[in-house]
Structure formats: structure tokens, C-alpha cells
Image 1 (cartoon, chains in turn red, yellow):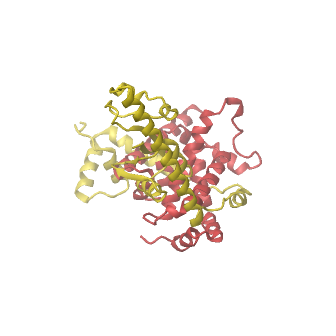
Image 2 (cartoon, helix red, strand yellow; image 1 turned 90 degrees about the vertical axis):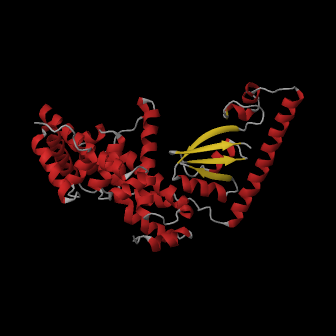
Image 3 (cartoon, chains in turn purple, red; image 1 turned 45 degrees about the vertical axis):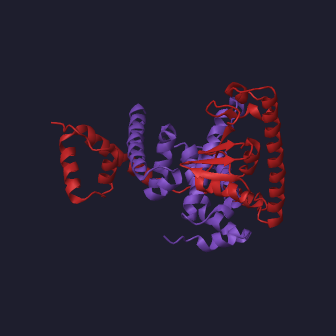
Length: 176
Length: 201
């Protein structure tokens, strides 16, 4: 498959900051959506996105084009979001930051929705799979590559993740 | 009546995505008509998919893009830096070899011949290394690290930095280096799922 980012990636690999800036512009919102939906916090998601782009910039010399740049980048994003979650668990309760930017009502409402609340309760593997497939529209082949599991496992995770999500949404509706 | 064997999740997913061959699709449809458990799972999964697909793409908060671009470090792409790093690696490797030689000499001198003594060898590095399968002094000390993958990239990265790294199944094995050296070489990758086994011989 031809990579739509190939030209910019080739320039960025040679240290061209302008080319990398174009790649950031292309992927920042999708990467942010991935991180925000898997972390449930706009502020932490923005930190994860920043970390992911820095890792990508430094790691570009190692990117050989064996996969799409976006697949490679999302893998870095999933890892960065995972690291944020680990960091959050390690922080004492009084040091945990307030969720999201209080000025940003759009993100606050989106990330406090019933759907997000249900997503937060899914296992991480299921959450990553359904967000990549149903929200970002990645193929399960891409998801298998970036999460390093078999395609069958991805299909199973999406199926179970969707079912569990609907169950959680149903439970919540019934409770309200 | 409920059929005795339920289709696997994978097939139920493929059914929902309309990816099955016609014959198998008909079989699953027939099963769903008689199995309320599977039919309910498929209905729930469809509801979950609808809920997810209604969500919109979120925008990176204002100012964050500029912050990202401002904080991009200088890339380590100059050959001069790499040569410098290699020299540092070489010196560290020689130092590690000297430590191993000294330890071996001490063990030989004291007549040490048990695996216990080997694994308990008291260098500073031994605290973070674990002995291999309990052999004698000939056994290498090993340690484990985890780096973000894929494993091929980790191995390639280490080879480029002058390490004797090989890919063995899903893990990377490094010979003739210490855990600290390998950790430093992989610092920019961050933690991950790729197991890196470091053997100091």
C-alpha cells in the first residue's frame, strides 16, 4: 500500500522540521482522539500526544517504511498513552491533576459523556481496539500490526469490546 | 433449541462485518435464529458499534501544537555524534570485559566451582543481573530490559550502535554488554513490550 505520508516522511527523516510539522498537522487530531478516548482525560491525552510526536521525531531514522507512517505513529501513541496511565497510577492522589483544561468545555463535555464513562470501564486492550477500528477507522490489519497481536485477536477484541460497551451503556441508562 | 457449538467471537465479528462466505454466513444466521445467547451478543455488539461510530474526532487543544513543535529536540543524525557514542561504547565494553576477567581470576584463585558462587559474584552490576540456569563460572550473567518495539527495530537499533544484538523469536539477545549500557542505548525508545536479554559475555 502506498503511504500518503511517504514524501514528508522522507524529508523529515533527513531532519527537515517543516516536513515534520506537516505530519504533525495531519495526524495531531487523530492521535489526540486516540489518546483522549483511551485515557479519558484531555490534559493527559495532550501530554501523551506531545510525547508521541517527540518519540516519533527522534525515532524517524529507524522507521523503514515497512508499515504506513500512521500505523507506526499510532503504535507510538498507544505506548505513550499507556505510559501516561502507568504514571497516573503511580502518582499520589493529591498530585493527580484536574481532568482536562477547565476552559475547554468541548473536551470536558465530550470526555464526561456516558460513552466515555463506559469506555473508561473497558479493558485497555478492548478500548484501544474499538477506538482504532470504530472511531478512527483503522483496518484490523493495521491494528494487528500496531498492537502486535494476530488479526483474529483484534477481531475478537473489537467484538467483545463493542458488546461490553453496549452492556455498560445499557446498565448506565437503566440506573439513571 | 440451542445449537451445541457456538461460533467463535471472530466469526461473529466477521458475520457482523459481512465478511463471511455465503455458505458460512447462512450457517451462522441459522445458528443465531435458534441461539438466544449468540443472538444477544451480536445485537449488543451492533449497538456498541453504533454508539462508537457516532463519536466525533476531537481537536488537539489550542496551543498544544505549538508546544509540541517548540519542544522537538535536535535529532541525533550527525555521524560525529554516532562516532562519539561508539567510542564511549567501546570503552565501556572494555571496562566490562576487565571486570569479568577480574571476577573469573578471583574465582579460579579461590577454587570457586559452584554455580552459587557464580550467581552471587559481588560486583556492583550483579545486583541488577540474574544468573542463567545455574551452571558454573562459565555461565554468563544475564539481565532483562523491556523496550518499545517492534523487536526487529530494537535489534537493528542496537546493532547500529555497535552492540552484538540478535533477534531470537520475539526477543532481542545482546552479548558482551552490561544492562546499563543497553539501557542507555535504548533510552530514546522508552519502555515497552519487547524483551531484551543482556548477556555480559
